[in-house]
Length: 445
Image 1: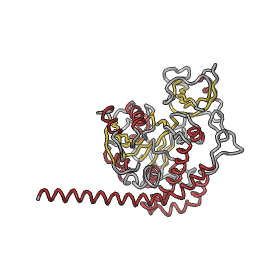
Image 2: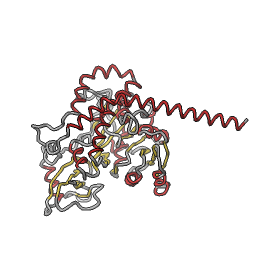
Image 3: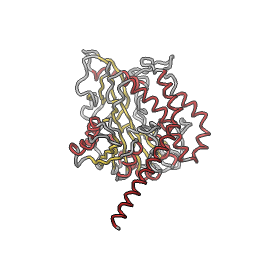
């Protein structure tokens, strides 16, 4: 059964005395007269929580969802700004800094319909100085190029990357980007109008910041696979802003920085351009579209932190993601996430062997962590928080956990296969350039 989506601001600027209710990004109209409603709750425009409420036909959705939110065990309190490290002078408030010049990179492959929806939301951003760059990855048709040229001419830039792989496409975007910051999102998201400003402004306030990630919520919940994924956290990393500093490792992250999955996701991330280029960008043997199946974003997070840069999670930078719709999609995703996790760890060790001692020291706890994240997730003794998707209501299937573990076993092999493929592609490109050069020399002579 589908779950309707709403956006509820409890003290929005247009109605300071009452809640402001709007419809989810993919709903397209008012919610049904009765049924379950998933709502993002905002306070003063800032994402605060998500709640799930059942609304009857004769009830006001705003009143029901507000009551559910206020009945939660842990009512939301606006978080205080993160404290700077003790040896570091206090930095100016993020809100006072102007967002820097930014290039938004969207890598895509044969999904012109979804891409158009994403581009419309990106062009509606309130950021004062940005460009949008579409990277068409190993296209087999001209659909993406035709879309950009016909519908977004002069507003969206287009480049083509013939080698398949998300990391390769992102590196193509990095090479073509300009400005202080490079932001990345996917072709299956809808960006909140304030997304890019919230994601990039922290770079202006903190010169030591190398990466910012943001909040990812579901654009729609219409299938059981989508509901199951979101009921177990989806892609969200919470509603509290957080700063990860390699000079002051977080006490509650004993595996830092190797638990890169807790930092954010590739559908919502931005990097200081010079920092990302200095670490070599993304590993082309990782990511969707390669035998490694994922891990390109995790690799970049760890490389940035290992280089001494800070990473900030900013939940006010919000995108709405279209989750996979079918059970087979979810099975593929579970396997791919497991593979991507160990593939990125393999990539780190291959490309930065100096990190091996630190990883080995944390390996015992790392194995325990891996078992925990792929375990049978429901807590039989636990009860879901009021108004949330509960694990007891949507148990995580054991076969998905088994698929994640199988993916983890495959990940290192997948990465090595991908490296072989990258080298062959590089040799082929070099031979092609050499042939072109020889032909040019013969013509001149």
